[in-house]
Image 1 (cartoon, rainbow, N blue to C red):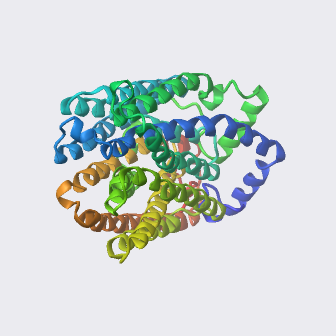
Image 2: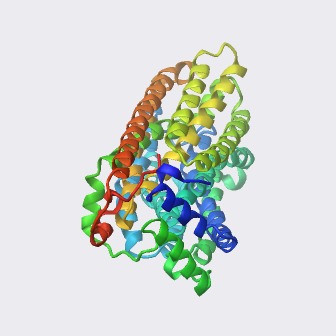
Length: 477
């Protein structure tokens, strides 16, 4: 695979480095890292997404009725989760940078698993509000933490596909969650508890059990990785240092935090996710309700969330493979946005239930695929470990403000015609994301061309602090 214009080095340098670090030994090393990181981290994210979205399945089994939650207040409960998520995103990644993922990520999983389980024990609206805030606060650190962890194990061109596999856990959570909710819902009355209570209790207990195993499997930083031999660690750091800053042991400095928060590209990545997060969470949280609104019984709606989510997972993996193959992100993000827009249009205008259900599939495939691509983008383009950690967390922080808007706009009074108003607004958010993607694409392409014309002289002493502002750095488009 040629990385051509999108690499931090010139074309000839890039190809030489790629060839030097793409030996059979390197491929074996990457496979070993994949086997250690991807299964456990993808499972953690699957559980994270399951625990935040299973409230949608619980709702159609009677949660709001039993807890006497007024219809508008259900949306408030959803938004409270994202308020906490936004507040704790950046602090969580700063803590991760100061400590170790081997301890931090499993601990987060353990605590949110307990919070998720506790959702099945609440007795009123106030309890639901409080536990949703705690769930958001404890889940906030997982996604940006894992994206940052990937950046210290994989070279830039290797990250996007791994992020896609990891994010595919979100789509699989939707498919798995529908089947699980259908099965657990049949426990209604067991032990004197409602079916929706058992959804939270059993799925939360599963998360707690997996978190204990995760303490033994989640690795620490690459330069201390005990699952690698000394020779493998040395080779890994050589590969990372030849590609970017990922292999360097960088001390925390507030200078790099400020550098991240004053970079217009970091803000653009965050605004891009803001557009996609609106549709990601409104779709994932309200999909059972939308499908139920097509005329299906509640138990049928649970099962019929499986096909669109399964298609979304397949779409993620296929599209991101193509994106990695050609080493471009922007055109595929834009393409995913338009696929989702087509899906919403079909959902809005389809003359039959079958056609509207097809629209749901297009929307899910486009929304999940676009998110998988855009969430790996700053990890590839931001140099400096602290700056990258803050940038990834900030992207999700500002982005999830879109999620807050999404769950508040899909209000009961807008539920007519399968949330017609909300779906139209979703199209607007997707068009906004297309505009931001185009801005990033055009600006970075122009900057790559400008830097290609500059001969870097006497910059070696400044490279460390310049990071992605160095004239030798090339953006992945």
